[in-house]
Image 1 (spheres, rainbow, N blue to C red):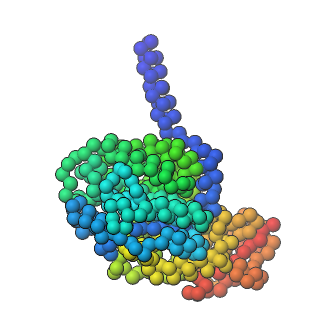
Image 2: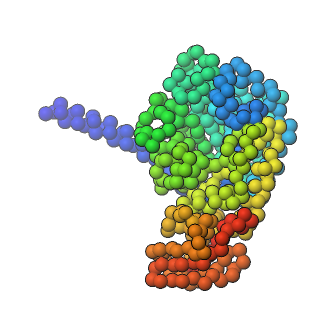
Image 3: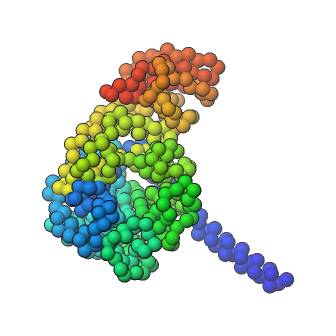
Amino acid sequence: MKLRLLILFVLFLKIGTASAQEIYVPTEANLKAREWFSNAKYGMFIHWGPFSIPGSGEWVMNDRKITVTNYTRLEKFFNPIDFNADEWVALAKKGGMKYITLITRHHDGFSMWDTQYSDFNIMHTPFKRDIVKEMGEACHKQGIKLFLYYSLLDWRRDDYQYWTGRTGKASGRTVHGDWNHYIAFMKNQLTELLTKYGEIGGIWFDGLWDQMPEESKTRKDNDVNVDWHTREIYDLIHKLQPQCLVGNNHHMTPLPGEDFQMFEQDVPGENNNGLSFQKISNLPLETCATMNGSWGFNLTDTTYKTPAQLVNLLVRSAGNGGNLLLNIGPMPNGEIQLEFIDRIRWMGNWTGIYGESIYNTTGGYLRPQKWGAITRKGKFVYVHVLKPEGNSVTLSNIPFSIKGAYLLKNKVPVKYMLNKNELVLPVNQPTAADPDNVIVLETK
């Protein structure tokens, strides 16, 4: 009997310890940062590095089956003499974006900063300038928050457990290195990023899916080949900068220690592209999306989204209470191509008129519909009419009383019909120049 009680007591201690390790209580600074992030609504994603040189996107090493030896030669070609951090940040700011998420290390293992933990980095190129430092200084000067993308997988290193991963199979590696050494390497690099460049808004992880089965709606959250030590890594980040938000593009239910949830090429909950089938959590949300079909610079990809499509993405993301992180893939010389610049400026003009219905809002009482989406700020409800089927939009079961309605762009009153809690709004068909007819409902 005593032995049984002792066993139960030990089991209780083990369960209690495991539970305590899983519990994550964000600090007050972190909660304030989450609130800021939820209100920001719009940011710029930057995919850029030596992978930009071939002009075939950021997966060129994997897609073309380039070996580590051959890919490393790109280091000697990366000399972005036209890069200007101040101009990049100014473009984002003028475009209505509130934060920038910069690639610091992608799957090819190249580090865009002066790191002492890898020889494959920006200081060993002809450029010899710390990209993260210059972007950090420009962001801090112009009032734009800087988030840092960091890849968990690596197509070059021997200590990354590539033999159980799904990608990087043709890199020519034969040595099976020490996985714990790789974890320590990532911790050291993250410590550099969080101690050398001032306040960082967040760390944007990617690549955990490399150690999981192919994307599938039936895949389980815990179906992972390796121990990523995610909680240790997350705790390190929060220790170094408590306000720093942690997100991980693993396409699973958020893990303990994560502060926001991202959806790749998908508005949360819609799963139009098959990558973001995970359920929406209570964390701040973010849609990351490309302006064409590529993340990194691609010479042959001219499938650019129209301004109307970009507005649709921003509005539907906001209608879910989330952000849009819109990507650019600069050219290897450091220029941002004109197609991206034109669209960012167009969106800047649009947010200059309609930003009230996006920034600092929450999602509507309805999830985004086929015709559009709803956002809300205080007593104002914003009805975004994107694709109406006719000349009116009907809102059923409205949970508020209406004092008045008008068009946001010119304050012209809108004559609506109200029958109990069903509201019928007359609408105009959107155009390429004006793709979102925003109707403001002032509630009582």
